Image (cartoon, rainbow, N blue to C red; front, side, top):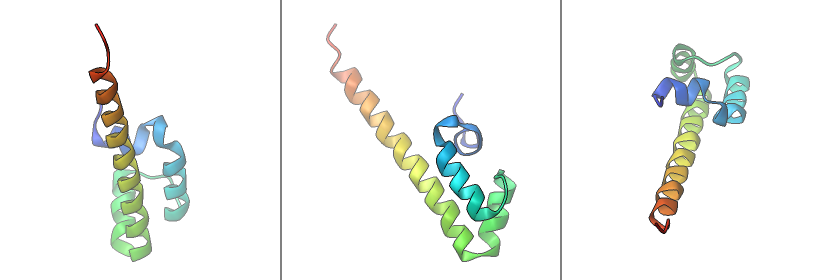
Length: 75
């Protein structure tokens, strides 16, 4: 099931990006910790924003590829 928390916190597809963010924030990420980091320092705000942008951009590109493949299926 897709939801925001799964995508950003649990999904195995983004483990590398999540690990980089955890290094930047200095601890394992949770929604609360992401918000706390964003509030405290501009650098952490940017790290979280970059993480979210990267994940959503990739998800959108993957979805477009799936839709294109579906349109090209011959029945």
